[in-house]
Image (cartoon, rainbow, N blue to C red; front, top):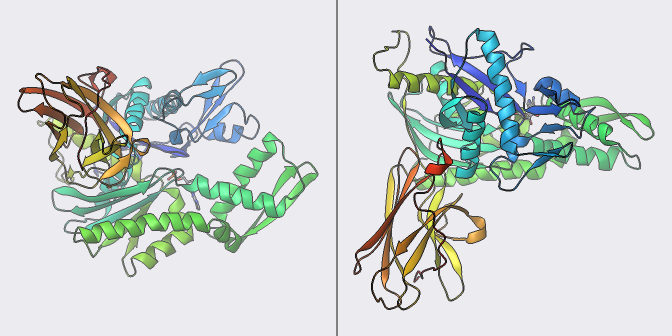
Length: 511
Ligand code: AMP
């Protein structure tokens, strides 16, 4: 049968895996260098040649201007282009190159063509970033079966190693660029998400940056570094960071304007110069704990660590101080996400082919009951000149979820009202427009001569498959508008918004 794969498209490293049909476990597929991890790096060579992966990462020292890394931090962010040799690439195009290379390597290793994949994304990614990731997958030649949240993928993997039925588990996933936390109750047949939280801008590369700046200001004072020495320092500082996860002290050398210089660093120094980042990482966990307690979850049975950055001893210590006594499980930190995505991908395929029965040895794959990782609302004037997003559906509500709210016309005889739908990443009732991102808009045409402050009813319903239904109506004129927006990602951007007119009129929400 055709293999389907799970792909962890990471900020610093990627992995691709397929399910072993005998054990039901995910197995990583090695790249052409024999490694299960492929650096998320693309080096553009002179004659249009491309080097992708671990060699490209090494190339960054020699060709810092034509080697692109950390592109996941930029994907789906509007108007960002990466210029190499005068040619502009979108982050999505770079990710597509990386995915294509993973696909080709895996095809060579397996000796068969691969068409279908599940790609993982941070649980905290918004719709635009999910959409861009989906499109990168398609550009690379995949049929993308689904996008799966990274910590949930890690949970699928862990559940095949240990059985978590009846347990409440928290996954703490700190990778190269993002922090993701998911807490879920596991049953015999399902994974029921309780809380999703995280920080899209916090990961190992921030620790690297803080460490490099400390090294420059304390150990490289008065010397200058050219672009390739800067890159050498970046690579060696990252290696030193990794060594300091095991040792108390380490030494490396770097080339400076006054010759090669030896640099000695200690774990104490590293922890001191990255303390603010640790605090940020732990504050997210403390807030998650509060949200869990609001939802009646006071006890965790297990914490699972994944993502390479959880190897820093400060992370495990911080977690243990917030949840003392809870067992912490850390296995497969770098590959768990890809392996779990492969298990999930295979389950999706089996669902589509009910005639195929799983072997006796295999456990049935559990249904994922999601919560929403973001909040959704409508933009409305809350005062004379003050327009805000009034959230109606809130982060961490179980899906499907639905809410109806009343808004009001802003003027006498208003003929249309714009329903602008925004998403934001926390659960506040009112958000500044600039703190939320526009998901789509539609227009309610109003018949009749209504005085200002006539009610308009808006209903938002978010389905488990990520489709957000917007329904607005005005009772007396019997007019209504319905639109469907994608919050997860879909196959074609054309399906994104049913009604796309530009409407300037805005209505008033009386608070
Ligand atoms: P991931 O996105 O899960 O591949 O994680 C990559 C991040 O983990 C990078 O920032 C690495 O520098 C970091 N990392 C990997 N191994 C270690 C280690 N032993 N100690 C500290 N950080 C590590």
